[in-house]
Image: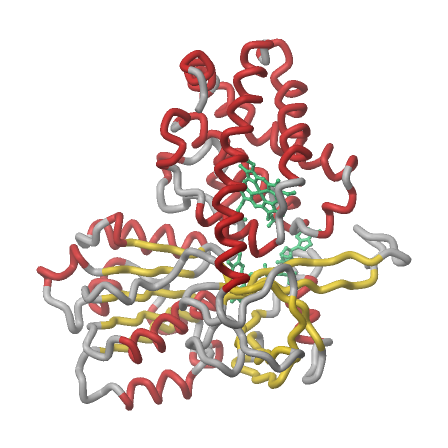
Length: 424
Ligand SMILES: Cc1cc2nc3c(=O)[nH]c(=O)nc-3n(C[C@H](O)[C@H](O)[C@H](O)COP(=O)(O)OP(=O)(O)OC[C@H]3O[C@@H](n4cnc5c(N)ncnc54)[C@H](O)[C@@H]3O)c2cc1C
Ligand code: HEM
């Protein structure tokens, strides 16, 4: 519990954090990686390069300062799930704390008075404790469940399917042939790929581990985990994505891939009976396709509208599976699958959403509809704006980001100047 004095001081630093937040977190990462190079193996360097991770951290610190007297009201769970997927341990918290507070002092200079530093030291301990407690619980749950495990477990690539020229599905079975943990549709697994240095960021005589999350794209089953990976091609002379190209160009049936247990709190609520609206763009279809398949099994009477936006038929994954679902559930009249090809219909807009989201639901049901969105950030921002105009309720709209978490749907809560960073 923080003292009243510290609470007041932390609140008074909100304008400073708005001003210096991203500068502090950028310096924090630079200094920490210099002092602790082994940590380079658990962070995603692309998220450092494009600044999304420093922004996500700065934003969380800002939110912690704003809500300091009711820390328990901040939803830490998306970060807790990421930390658990990455194997973050309590011993790492003092290292992060020392570098974070050190960076605050360097960036804020005289504005970082001894009182401010003392209050932030106390606050860091409180926030870190909240994370460590929640992470301990989640580690316990994930390890103790049937088929669960801690850290990494080795899986064998059992099958590879080409969904589109740029998306391949990989089916994994455990090397130990024992049971696998189930998951809630919407969750992701985290792969750890160790490669020889590329001679650019990492010397060629050194190895580097690349950690990446991939949403599970099939419904939960006892047999396999399926992920569907989009090959990231570099834009404007930038290098191609490391891990996705490794999956597409190198990984073959029989290869072994270490991964951590399914995690993530972007999950479908199959206890609710209200209509469900799933809106996805591009490879963002993966978590929503898992949700769609599982909801149809668990709740065949629930009304579902599925809107999938992609460039054209040639870029559409899961064609046959979608067709099969449409045929299987035609009789019920509850499922409507809507494909929006931008080459014919342009990008998604309010009219398209209105047309497809109300096919099998009444206007009176809109406010209670559960909405799940996944796709590129500008896509999700546009869809969210349109949904609110159409009467969908903010608290019923859930979204997944294929990158560091930032409150993309709540522009008023964003740190100044970061909109461009997260949109690109
Ligand atoms: C919760 C979650 C779920 C996800 N689910 C999926 C999924 O189901 N399917 C899927 O395909 N992906 C998914 N992702 C994204 C995935 O984790 C990876 O981020 C993605 O595959 C790209 O990784 P990469 O190693 O190939 O690219 P990286 O090497 O990380 O590169 C990322 C981007 O940065 C660019 N880049 C690289 N180097 C530079 C440079 N020097 N300068 C400028 N630009 C550069 C690359 O061209 C590329 O576009 C998910 C992410 C999260 C967080
Ligand atoms: C109170 C302390 C901490 C806060 C507020 C914090 C906050 C965050 C936030 C906001 C994210 C982004 C979540 C996302 O990617 O979706 C994140 C991710 C991450 N955190 Fe933490 N974190 C803390 C402690 C730690 C510690 C102790 C470690 C261990 C070194 C750590 C390692 C990571 C890693 C590796 C990621 C993923 C980043 C990436 O994608 O590169 N964090 N954290």
